Length: 272
Image 1 (cartoon, rainbow, N blue to C red):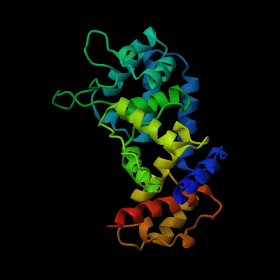
Image 2 (tube, rainbow, N blue to C red):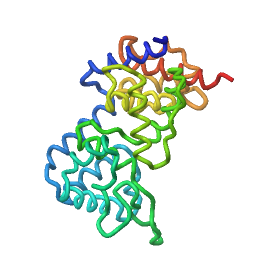
Image 3 (cartoon, rainbow, N blue to C red):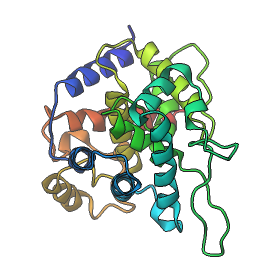
Image 4 (cartoon, rainbow, N blue to C red):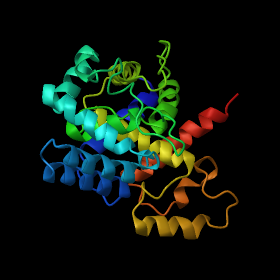
């Protein structure tokens, strides 16, 4: 096993044993799950409440479209009437069939449909990211999240591991190619602690640090310490140039491990 694979295995093992932390990511996740449990019917109103919260906390920007959240809530309600949403999403992971998600009276499905309109009445785009996040909570974290950060970090982790097999293509707004790519990565990582949930967290945390967006990665106290330390830096915090030994985070905190990995990935990117 390569050094980099051993590093990732250790990280996933630590993450598997951590149940709660004080980051905005964990608080947001717990809040959304609580709302899912409290709104336990499948009326359009309950589904709309869940979607609105996810859209707000994950910044998927659906609320900027006119009627987008309402349209999506109605489609999910109709799908649930034919097949419970949890089962539909779990079956989709296995059979990759869009049949349970076909929208009545249309040729589109849940993932390919366009939701909402613009100010001038023009159709807006798909909502794959928001739908995948809804499925993630509907299945209690057993569905992968389609996200720009995950798509950005996927090739970096693949190259970091040095896999000889050609990296699979993740087509834009295509849940089937995304799931297949995620499943292949999990298989290649060959670690019992890697799940959709833990992989999402590693890619998301490391991606946020890679971008220099730290607010949801750190607790408020940690974030204030970072601001004090790096406020004079032109362009803000850049993990590639940061002295990791000076980070205001204990070295036995798993968040420190995320910073280490983010720096390694960024330095690899800079190599010719």
